[in-house]
Length: 363
Image (cartoon, rainbow, N blue to C red; front, side):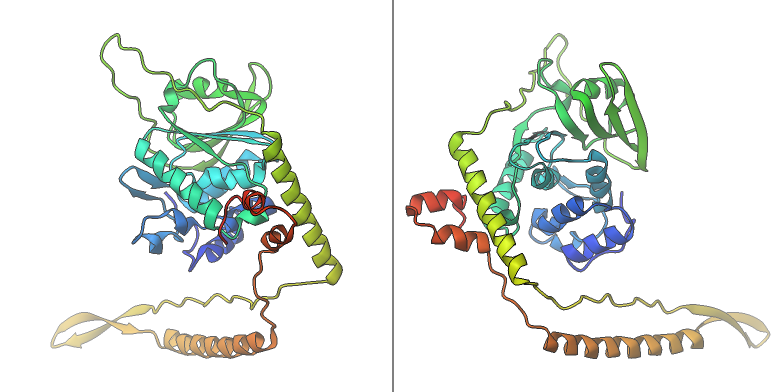
């Protein structure tokens, strides 16, 4: 499923295409997509496919098409402090983006059937926290992943404000999913080849609307011997953050706000060269017919109109390149500096406490 938008050269280019096609419609969703590079969730050797609007699967590892994730993120209507459950959390790509929006006072849980995929998701999460330049620009709710079957969640589990299921749900299981949702909450899942948004309006009342035609693999029901009871999946507990952790969140927020105020006061604006997209031109070929002996034989020839059009396209591209070079010459390139990190390192604190405030990031 996918292919609704053009392929991008990189993550930002892909997001530009999703915005242009109206799959991404709000600023907070755009910021989350730009902060998490989709290519980082691909295996080595497959990254070239990361910025196409296509689903990708290798073994148990799976990523849906970017247009699907965009619609899901918009339909969830995420806000800071909400609780989120990802059923079939996979690589953790979506859960990590959600964590950037719901922030440190939210709840971010994921259930995934395959143990190796949960390990992969935890690895990718650790890499994001330690290495991504985006981590220090957001307040983050770290996802917690558990191994288990989404259809075997314990009946006494807590409810969530937002739920997404990343596998096809049969009508028989629709009510099972709804029970996990708080009143006023939103559930997004594929039902009968339609990505559907369901809002719980009361104890036993619901509103639903179809978002997009989709094709998802169905939820897996594990086969068991007759009379054998399934092991109930225990969701992670909803815990209160420690005072130490809350202090770290508040200190980082205060320093980030002070930095933003200083930059606004100084009128600091980081300018970057405008990225132009190259026009794509396809050579058309037209049918003509020639007589050979007494036979009429079709031949394919290039259209002269198209040849002239291609020449004009080359001239325009050359002019744009020259203009871009002039633009770059006039723009003062400002080196990217992690101001939050610099501020923390400058604090009169023990090195161990600085490392804690930095989440032990090395850069």
